[in-house]
Image (cartoon, rainbow, N blue to C red; front, side):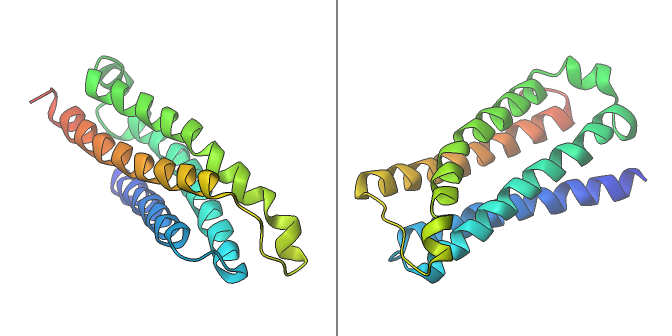
Length: 148
């Protein structure tokens, strides 16, 4: 069972990163109705994968890996969880923006997005990807038992 949960955890983590990469590519392209719809789908996949990552990750720490006591005392793990929560909050801004496009897209119209808002979304997605890199570093440190 431990192997299954490890596999699922990695699968959802890679799916999350792929969804972020798709969002980044699409938000840097010309905004079309088709690309706006793709952004909505990629953002939905991002949210689903993040949720499933938590659903699979909690049992992993509690029952299948080193145990809750180990992880509760691991600073790299706590930093990793803090960054994950911070990225979840950070991710709300693009999600709210993308969801606001639904009415226009249902009508087959292109949503109106100010250039300043678009640049902010781009910067947020870049930040999320950088946060994922730090999470990966913290995960490796937590698995190995320390900062180095």
